[in-house]
Length: 67
Image (cartoon, rainbow, N blue to C red; front, side, top):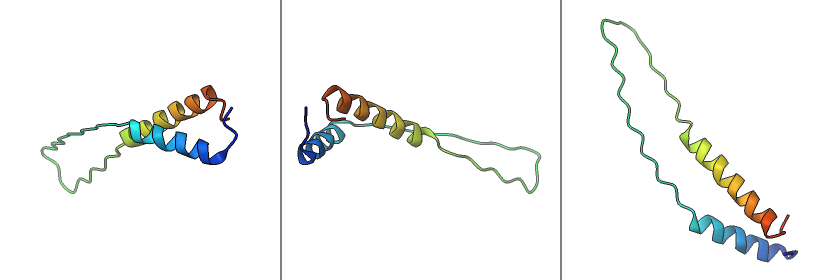
């Protein structure tokens, strides 16, 4: 069990340093025969990647008996 918060912080930092996510988004929107059209897009990939990373971190912390 890692009860010391400094050790827990170090473990968390090591986990963050060893994880890497690469992401490329390309999109093209073509609107023909339209006037005064506004297109809004939302990129949710980053939020999903952060959520997955946090779930992995939580699982590792539980496995290491930090939580």
